[in-house]
Amino acid sequence: MRNQTARKPARMLGTASWGSLALAAALSASAAWQAGSEREGFSSASLLPVPQQAVPVASPAPRPRPEPVRAAAPAPPVEVRIFSEGELRRGETLALALDRQDVSAQLVNEIATALRPVFDFRYARAGDRYRLAQDEQGRIVEFEYRRSEWERYTLARQGDALVAERIEPELQIEQARVAGMISTNLYDAVEALGESGELTHDFAEIFAWDVDFSRSVRPGDEFHILYERRYLKNPQGSRRYVGAGRILAARYASVLGDEHSAVYFEHAKGRGGYYRADGSAVERQFLQAPLTYRRISSSYTTSRVHPITGRRTPHLGIDYAAASGTPVWAVGNGRVTFRGWLGGLGRTVKIRHENGYESWYGHLSRFPKLSVGQSVRQKQVIGYVGSSGLSTGPHLHFLLKKNGRHVNPSRMHAAAAAPISGQQKQQFATVRDGLLQALDPNALRIVTNEAL
Image 1 (tube, rainbow, N blue to C red):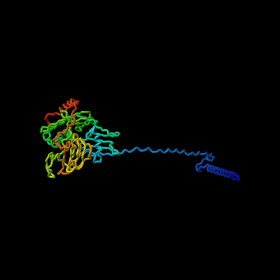
Image 2: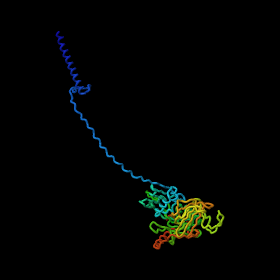
Image 3: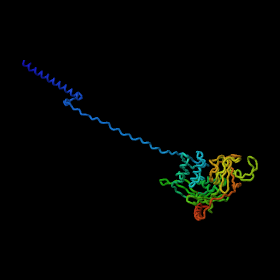
Image 4: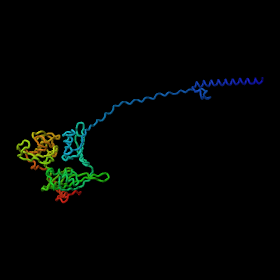
């Protein structure tokens, strides 16, 4: 009995303990729920109430004030440029080349006039390159004329003026001499000595007023040329030959006994010309012929049977047979007085010159851009050989009048340009003697091509 009584209080105590524990657990769960805690993983600390702190609510950041809208700056005006560029063809002038690109003759004349202080377009040749820039109004902005890698000429607009400039790289200049004897023609003879056609062209230009190289050259004729050889230096210090420069002295002797010589003399800074040994100018008012031709088909005569009409009439001019399309030059400076169709002469150009002279060019096939009243310079192309009008084949009918009366062009001795002035005669004599000595004007002893 005693034993049973002893176990009973113990069983009651155990029950109370479990009840206390259950009550504690319930209170703990309630506290945890009120604190918003998770039931899992709580500790005895979670049984204590935790005071809630107010969380400050951040006020919204002030919005940036918008920048004021500014008007866009006006765009700079667009400069429009119209470009025309190309290369001169054989027998072509700058006027004809630009005419193919719809550039007016007036604009070409403006270019030629502006460049005249540094370049004369009478000496333009095939292969020369050009580049023209115009604005929207058609005015010249820039112009470049390139003859070679070492010789070019430019025009640049400065306000209302066009400023001309010759631009050359640094070159080494040396004097050289070529001399030879003609067997076929001058071009072949010079080329056989290793020089280009450019030197031949410049030599023929010097004596264009005295020698007609189209028909007057004969086997055995001699030529001597003292000229500048031009060398271009590269940054490494080596150099290469880039072509012939200015001819300093020249001599041409025909087997018929005619002899012509000339030296270059600069009578003003940057301006010079060719003169004979006596100081007279080589250049004359008129050229020997207005074109390069094959033969003279009809000479000047007061009586000739016309090949078409059969009538005997005067032929007061010279007929030059040449291929159709051959350029025809003005024989001298002047002004165009007629351009159009003239009866049996077909397409014709008339030019009035100084001292009462007037030249006529008939049977042309076409004209470059040429207008009545326009000024032309000696050796400027004014037409092309054709067979218009009463003609049996392509040729040029050329006649010359003085004060309204016909004159024989082959017998006319036109006035020469101004000679060396009295104040420069001594200076000219010194230059002349030195150049002729270097040229070696004696009879040709040996064909030569040598640097001096």
